[in-house]
Image (cartoon, rainbow, N blue to C red):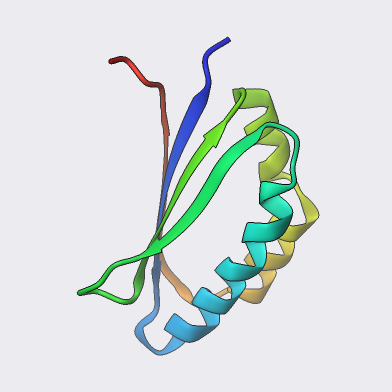
Length: 96
């Protein structure tokens, strides 16, 4: 089975940038400890600080899906309710 790359874009509401950033940081350690997580790297745009980006690699799609149901992800969603302007996720496979 192919490894899975996840590209997640999160854009915070302008006056909620620090809240969203703090909550995103809370996801890093527990996610990196999850089965199947190869890397889980958070980035912040240098010119648009409200834009965050996760670059993730997982051993398989089922393990990533298990992550999506993890308690720390649910806690993040509750803590950032109303603070996220945009959110998108792309599931990618290396082809070259």
